[in-house]
Length: 359
Ligand code: CP3
Image (cartoon, rainbow, N blue to C red; front, side, top):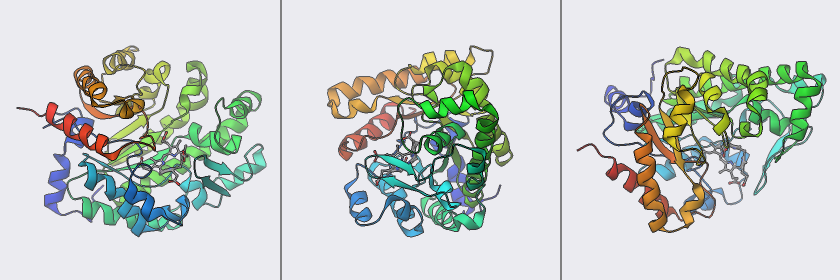
């Protein structure tokens, strides 16, 4: 897919960016680094700009999306930007009644429990999210050689909010639905796969250089349940996006038992939380006979408040373990905690980039 908003110079700089080289398993000038949830939360300039504006409102205003997406790029010098939005935005865009409550997360007014509830879940069209196209086009032109990562929630994680009605620890209602009415579960997950495909296609067609499919809560499932209830739907999303040729990243928390299956779903880059060392993650990805793949991760976010003496040896260990993969994108094992001191993140970026620089 061509990217009309990019000059030939920017296109070449992008192709040679550390992030895209690592995602393709090619030699890199340094190990690229970005952070999940780098946009928002801990940045004072984010809190200032969000004053009096709800999360979802801010996601529908291209001027705010552009500014908030760029804030961490300016401040930290990260190797990639992640589009500022939320996994429930496409549902909101097709009319599902939901809000994002501060400190809580997405809350759905009428949870999905019956076949009749499914009508609310239809794929987004580009005109439902014209502000996304506008913001991505503006971002890619301002970012030049820095890649923009588009993202969506994977069918299971988004379904968990729709079925539970809000955040959950045990996903009891979601699992009950899978077991008691598998046909309804598969119909819902299939619709959510179509939502993710449509929403990610909009972002890629507007110029995003890579996409990440967040299955944050898939680690709540056994491998057996993941394989029959979830993997086919995530696989549908990855397969539909293959035509674009952009790297497809996949991530979930507590997915040590699922890394092989999540890789098999069709990810080009496998995200790893802090529980599994990256070299062990590579072994798990290849255990069923699959080819080794680039990995992303995996500094424990809790360490960000533990002091530099604790953080630095962990960076060294992760950079060393990441060498077991054909490509390594440095990240946290999950999102930036809201209390993080921005100076610490800046120091992590500089340390990763300088320690890994090719002589
Ligand atoms: O990564 C980035 O910087 C881009 C922005 C981004 C947000 N949400 C902004 C946001 C991304 C990639 C997401 C994805 C997302 N949203 C996920 C997957 C990633 C992950 O963390 O596992 C999930 C599970 C959600 C659902 C969600 N939305 C949660 C759990 C929360 C946090 C609730 C809280 O306040 O602790 C949100 C709200 C949210 N999404 C905020 C931001 C900046 C905070 C709300 C605010 O600023 O008012």
